[in-house]
Length: 62
Ligand SMILES: [Zn+2]
Image 1: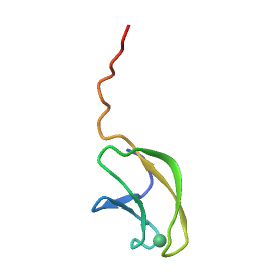
Image 2: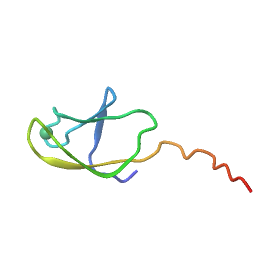
Image 3: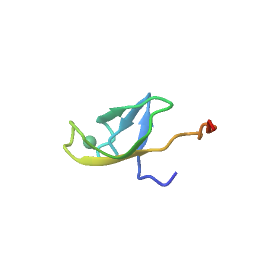
Image 4: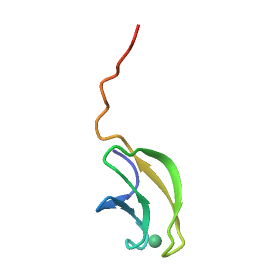
């Protein structure tokens, strides 16, 4: 996982700048790619990258 310094705490992506603001609520299966979220606390915009934890087995129907 080579995203930035995204911190997830209690199901929330925490702002890496001030480390206090909540940027985005995430679930275990949440994915995001270059999702810009602006911190309400410090006003800095951060690109959120969240990769899927485990790739689900692909179901290919012929
Ligand atoms: Zn912030």
